[in-house]
Length: 228
Image 1: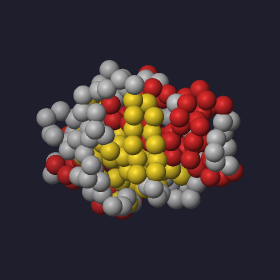
Image 2: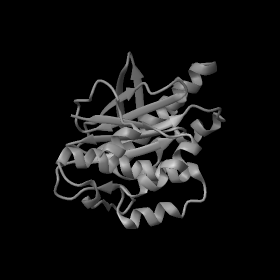
Image 3: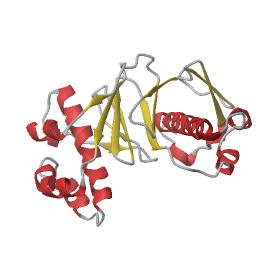
Image 4: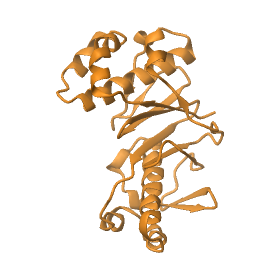
């Protein structure tokens, strides 16, 4: 099963009033890293990303969240050793999100914002650009971020990030179904996608080798962290 979790960032004043309590929930090295952030937004995203991962994984494994040791691949993708669990994080705007599965998984969330569509010509495949250009207005903007988050979630699944070209594979969206074609076949080529509603003005996409996705996002709150 692929599970998806989300946390909405706090107002700056509330965050500052709770910051010390929240930092105490992390190992010392993480506290020191987050303390170096000068901007509240950056500190929040880093802190709550770390807390979200530790809270969910600790609860799933039944261990103290402070004892969890994360490793990173050569491209920076965090992973766990010898647990059978895979996870991935993303953040944008007011949200931090996480996907958890017994298979490799990637997740991406983005704020829908005005963009220059020449970006699509640079990063999308010719087939994707053709479909995008058939759309207009806000529908076109939404479709751009549908494609962007789906493609990002796949790159995060395979652990390359943007070191691999977004135009090297094509995603088709038809009647709520997703199909991917790529120039070079990979092992474990059968991947599956899902999208979830988060809030108006956001797109959230998940990709995994596991085709069983949760039906809805599970929300985590401040009370969950502090109670833990």
